[in-house]
Length: 88
Image (cartoon, rainbow, N blue to C red):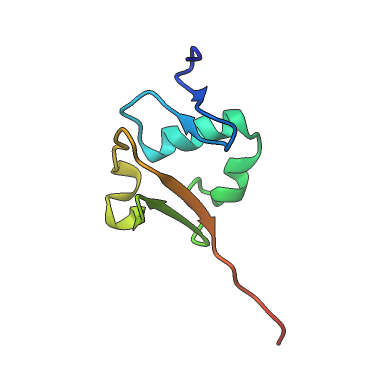
């Protein structure tokens, strides 16, 4: 395990983190792994972009407490950008 608490589990991109961890800390960890990702996920005020959906174990994080949700061992976290637009 790396000093920062993150280590690779396998080649599928699965990562583990030292717990407890909350959404802001998780996003900071992701930024260290994938520079620039926070700019895609957060608005200019640092809030989660309204077009980004985060699911924890198939539940929308907004209904689990949002930024205050404490991730648990074994949680599966999905970051899903909304798909919108089209031809008018």
